[in-house]
Length: 141
Image 1 (cartoon, helix red, strand yellow):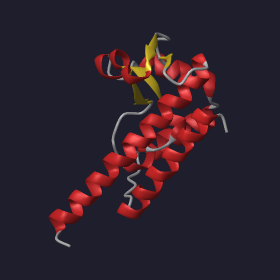
Image 2 (spheres, helix red, strand yellow):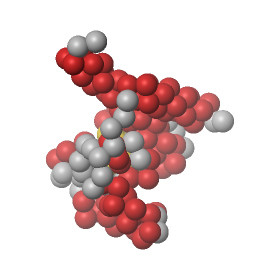
Image 3 (cartoon, rainbow, N blue to C red):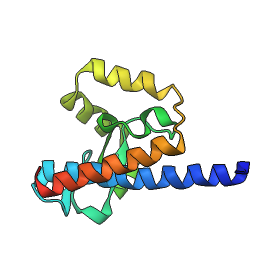
Image 4 (cartoon, rainbow, N blue to C red):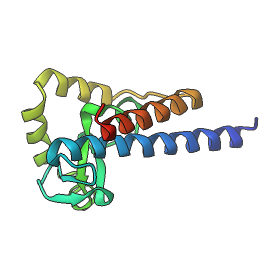
């Protein structure tokens, strides 16, 4: 396989994994905040929004692999908070402190400084894992 084909395969697998991870995060948070899988509360502003308009927003920005798929640092956010307000960081920090202990928050900050490179196989397995977790949430298992 050429380098270009290998890079494309990796990008495709990463995108697929992100799609499944994002669906899981938004489903998890919708169910936790409203009891419904099709709408939920924005983690940072509290606005109730339809599932399709929620995004999986990270507590710590950056796309390095070490925290990209860490469930603790990713929550459903409305598009305005996640993109319009660049994550609404002050509100996100406050919510994280309510939800997690300082040790967990510190671990996420340390992890954010590290790079994690996933193989295509690891990404494919993660995609399957998050697809199954989402199905379990929706089915109430």
